[in-house]
Length: 114
Length: 113
Image 1: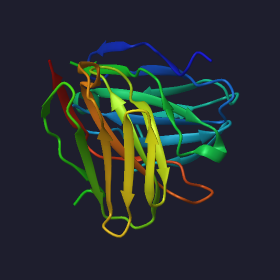
Image 2: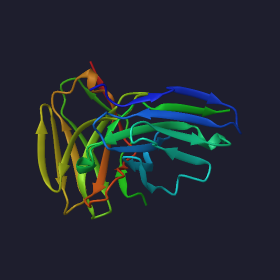
Image 3: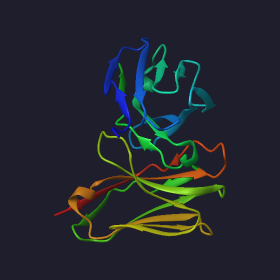
Image 4: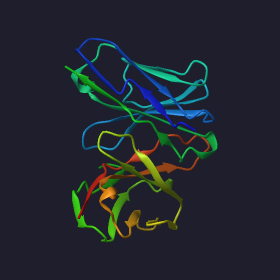
């Protein structure tokens, strides 16, 4: 069990550019979650997938954000036309459906928008 | 008002001390209560979870939930410098479609030699 992995670990981009992050969950887990964490705050829920279906999206997930999990394995999170307010740590987590309270997090992707 | 409140600290204790970390919450629908540890610039690491009220012990860590007061605690015995991190409480409602965790802001703990 290699745990949840995320790529890249760091991303610096200019305002207005598009960025895409990847998450590989723990292989047996059918649920995958995305959270965002800013400095001094706890993670905030963005969205989650059960297998390939996106079942819930937070109001934090504006139209510029899109997430996919095409084959029920890895997931991507894309941010279009980045803004400075998008600078944050983007965290991915995974769990079994039956144990949604037991979520295991990856190391995160730190995004800096200049 | 946030659903989950947590004192951000920092909390500084000497090595070997007993540490008490706490969260309060407002949503009575929360049934699962988790504690995560997060080192600087790393992802949160699940320490333990508790369902409904009661205590749970795992090594040097003890989690307590008091649903009547909407108050949860994490105790760390014999604290070590390696325990220095931010501790996040998280909560979840208990339904078949439950998904998101609602986190506190985290308490930064420093254990000194």
